[in-house]
Amino acid sequence: MPPADHRAMEQFAGVDIGGTVVKLGICNDEGRVLARSSVAFERAARPDEMLDRIAAAVVALVADAGAVRACGVGTPGQLDPERRSLRCAINLPEWKDVAIPELLSSRLGIPVVVENDGNCAAWGESRAGAGRGARTLVLFTLGTGVGGGIVLDGELWTGAGGAAGALGHLVIDPAGPVCGCGQRGCLQQFASATAISRRFGDGSADAAFEAARRGDADGTAAVAEACEALAIAAADVIHMLQPDLLVLGGGLTGAGDALLLPVRERVRRHVRVTWLEHTRIEFASLGGDAGWIGAALIAAHSVSPTS
Amino acid sequence: MPPADHRAMEQFAGVDIGGTVVKLGICNDEGRVLARSSVAFERAARPDEMLDRIAAAVVALVADAGAVRACGVGTPGQLDPERRSLRCAINLPEWKDVAIPELLSSRLGIPVVVENDGNCAAWGESRAGAGRGARTLVLFTLGTGVGGGIVLDGELWTGAGGAAGALGHLVIDPAGPVCGCGQRGCLQQFASATAISRRFGDGSADAAFEAARRGDADGTAAVAEACEALAIAAADVIHMLQPDLLVLGGGLTGAGDALLLPVRERVRRHVRVTWLEHTRIEFASLGGDAGWIGAALIAAHSVSPTS
Image 1 (cartoon, rainbow over the protein chains, first blue to last red):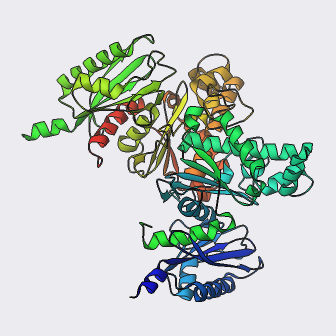
Image 2: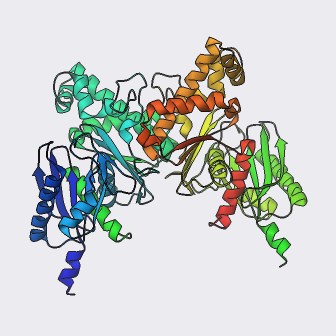
Image 3: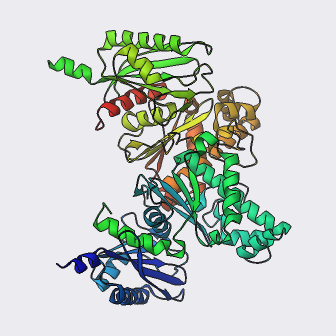
């Protein structure tokens, strides 16, 4: 086989299914981006139709960037422990017990693996992003909700039932707002874009950060509450696991130092320096590509566990 | 070498250093107890003197139960990440940077390893106690304070700096009582014997459970607060790691079903059944021997990682 073909076989496709858009791309086994695209869809779209469009988009990318050896798919919601199907997802109301790997593999003719989207982002950051070189990484994804993913000693930690890393449901304040999960005061009731916007009461999370920058009291309070909740969650993670690296990702990180610096400062109030000194707190570095790159690299790892 | 000697070499000594008593014993590599004893001491006792007495007690046990291949020591407080010395421990004020493995190995003539006492108990329960057969176990030790230990995929998880498993410092209520660590509302401010006694206001934690049994309002409130705090901490652990098994150990488990049943019931209010169904919640089964047995089995694992 000529070298060019061999190189092509070390490329992987990644797909990140969101609530209204699918991001996808092709990268090499180190996460270098070779091609990317996206597919917009309606929430009411049927899974079969969606998988047809996703498969067509992957085929179009392959025509540009060359063949891929396998494809990884990241989805929100709950997967079965064996990763054969997506059981359900709040943001994908039409998807019930959809055997994504089988259905997409039959369309593409290559192996397909599926993983939770927070886990994909954590794996992507650990292999190709902010976590390169870290053995152990815990990622918080701060978006409409709060998700997460955990990489321990270089392997994704999915837990006994495949649902570990649900960091948005760490309890911050047992007297806090009720969460969709049934608990009160979950992290995502304080540190999601939704929660910041609700607390601010006068626009989006971005608007809250902007108002805080101007010295507005409501904006300042909304941002401070989110940062303190994140600091408590980070302290819980550090006391429990003491990872090398704690990564903040997701859309909210667009706020930059107005988010990162107060979180770091508040974590120092919660965790003694002798405990804290082994854990760095950083922003994710792959931005909106983390999900699909991570999915592609999980596919790479599944066909060749040393990668 | 005759078979009898070979068997003797598969025995291990374990030492559990507490605030005023050292428990120790000899067990085989499956944790079966062959001999045990204890050494009482004053808090002001010097480490050198204490290590002399511990070594003499191990030698006396060996005279009874036969030779041991290695010795494990569990201690409270903070170890250096490489497990060469005990840096400091609140309950052992005279112990500062004490190279326990080196100092005890020179007295005993066998390899000595040291580990945090909560980690020893978690390892003991995972190998010879309630956690037999579980791949992943998280232990809460409920005593004067609250400690813990984590076994992931059959290996002790100590984290980047060796201090992981500090479960007593999970934040339960950010408006709660100040903890010695500097945070507010740590688990051990609600679910330790000290905290229950303080909340009850009229005697020990045992007295609070007894009062609750009689229907006394203060006793009932103190016990309910402890159980709810444990349920929140358990929910945090399950959302983060989804272990096979969550174990409650330490002196407080003497309360029996008055502790275990409400904790299980309250966890069901915090964690959805599809998340919770993969995690059992049980009491520890090694009682006061968990620490030294776990230390002995850590020593066994260190000289023969398949055990």
